[in-house]
Length: 112
Length: 191
Image 1 (cartoon, rainbow over the protein chains, first blue to last red):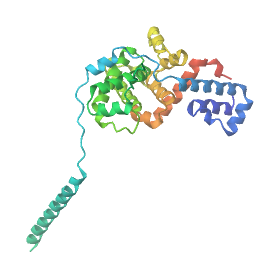
Image 2: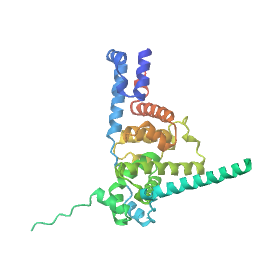
Image 3: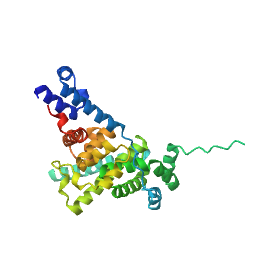
């Protein structure tokens, strides 16, 4: 096994056949064992991709079990309404400004 | 006389009704997606009894979260994510109970711990590849299943399994190599 063979063996389980380009592709064309390895991985990826997503039958009572155990739906957390945001922001700014003014007045009185 | 055809409820209609708290609509969604959710659960936890518990929990979590389902993804995709999270929660609970040390990255395939009858049940549809998947340790199998069967990205897998992207890539590489050797034998690859 040479360096290119090793590279093929690392690339196939990492990236798949898409990694076999350029010098690696040229090597695979001329190396029977590597070509066999590419075919084996190709077949494996195809089999994985072809697996059905619903091949296992759920227990016959699953739906009934679920429905029998449904609790209350979670309450949706409503975002604050946009038209409420402006007055709230104005109130926060006004409070901050008033606080700053009071602190400034206290500071000036003490300085005097 | 021509019989009147009754159209089955459309998924979007069921989803909207379920979001409003309609249990019958949600029950219909469960009936439509139960095999898909159960199949993913079996592939993640391997044990059919545990997979049934995971599926039930996943649907109940989905029911609670229905009002938050915005429809950005398909309902089935959303259910897959919930199923993965639920399976991992069950797995973590089991690990705490059994203090199972086999789930680390350095673990070997669990061939000796696999009940042959269960493996046969699990490998019902595509015996060769499905049975080979079941031989992988659960932490490696989850990554291979989610990437190569369900087409998740590395970052999605890392996010849902609570691992780094690098760890996901390492497990995927290792899992694919193990699968290839299980399917074709070690001798084929030596030259």
